[in-house]
Image (cartoon, rainbow, N blue to C red; front, side, top):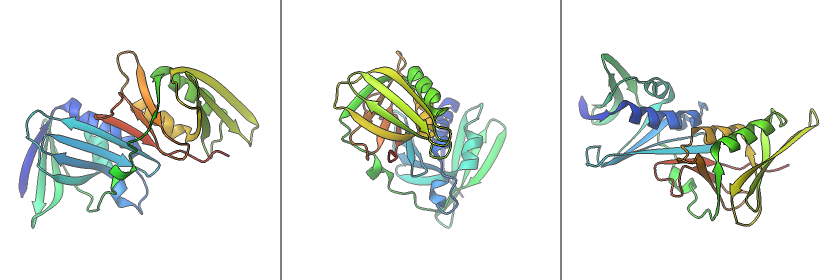
Length: 253
């Protein structure tokens, strides 16, 4: 039985799934994390994905209370990959059986796609997102991406570890590969006046987050931190209400 319909403009659904799909886990022993979690709340929906090393939250808001009042579900990754390439408006219908939500129906133009939902409980991700990151850097997105890619070539293909240092309006990225004995270092100017901090990242995770964040009109993004062992956030603006990328640090060798 179909219990409710929601109409998404193609750019809205493409954004929700496009921004979150890359961080979905492929660990079959954690089925709840192998899809994108949707939280419907009156006038907004959060799309969340995590593989426990990184987390993405994208939000879509509407002016009226036209979304389900309180509904949580997990969309399988294969469905997400299909819908994020929609070239038309998407009408989403919720299908229940015996009072339980079991499937979703996506209508895209003349195409209808029916998908099951993942019948698992998504982890309580809100508790992982730090609210007190006081160290804030404003960085040019393109220059940061260039720096990550430059250093990654001389970093370990196994650990993918790089070291990021923030100090006095400069972000320094270092990489080292013990097997080949290669080293690389580059500096990226930024706006930062906090205490010096060194933190390790998986360069692939950092590159994915920066690539998928939306920069402002000046191509600037925010990186916020607190301690070398606490999660870092990559944000399009200071609050990160509409889009947030979280990356867990790695222990520096």
